[in-house]
Image (cartoon, rainbow, N blue to C red; front, side, top):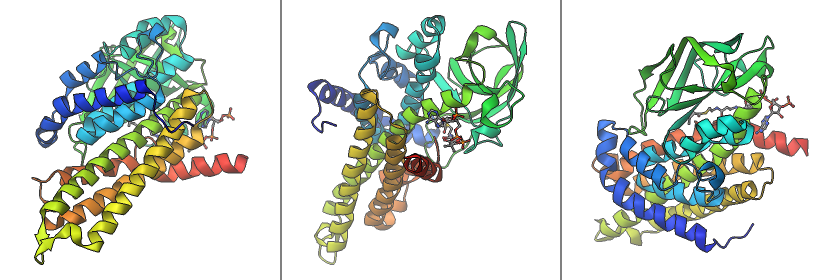
Length: 379
Ligand code: CAA
């Protein structure tokens, strides 16, 4: 891959940095404290083309590519990690339609999602199916020209605000991942409702809910791809999603380093700045090195995607390394802050909690290791 960014990629990065600095950073602490989902800001991000970054302009996407997407997402995450997860899921929700949707589904759903006129979410996880989506139970029974959906999805990012749900359900008699199919469900479909809103440790300005389907009728034309292809569709989308979460982790880690540097220069103990202590210097050196490595791994995965190359392994490596690194960086940055870092008035306290989710959602670190090992062993 080329390590030099193009002028266009650099421009996207600066645009996102400017937007994040003005629209997100100053209000992030209040939104997180009060659990306010920033729908208005997300709509503005849609207008800027930040929600359909990997969708061609023919379908109203900004066609910026995966590398630009990573750069922009890092900037958003450094200012507000909660908003970054929505940006990531909104972009992820364009993937099933772009890759597997037919022309009429693209016109009907992909165009509004990519242009930010509608917000999409991605619903795979169920109470009994997290790391193992092959165990999901939400049933979609064929009834003539419609499907009848019954079941529950959990932990769905911005599910309460989404206009379009990308959902995977069980259609066939086959057990495991062979009997799954992908569907589009519109907000307001009869029998579809939003259930419990989760009270989370971090990312508190991000909306996370249960979606409930009780005799919900969906037109057969909303089946995405072929019946039985649902698992593959979800995995393909998650490959892209993982590049997004890796970028979110890099952004959070960058913010941690920024806070640590500022505090280390300002704080004095034993008659001198704590930045003069070798222990502090080693911690910030390790943080900066980890961030750079994670950034490059993420860009490498994104560059493969932009060039149409397989990127499953690269995306898992980026997600694994970046999310674990972000948690180490948050730990070290909080340690540099000492007791103040444990107090809510310091930004590092929020970053520490926000970083934690990155090793869990869109595939835990253990799942990423499994994916990487399988790819390597397959040769
Ligand atoms: N791309 C395309 N196809 C893929 C694929 C990929 N990345 N990974 C697997 N497949 C295909 C395989 O080729 C195989 O196809 P064939 O049967 O035709 O050969 C099929 O899918 C089954 O593959 P596996 O046998 O590898 O499946 P498995 O059951 O062993 O599972 C797994 C593999 C990697 C563990 C997978 O289940 C997985 O990634 N689990 C984690 C799920 C996850 O990330 N959940 C998070 C949900 S989203 C979220 O977090 C919400 C949010 O809002 C942020």
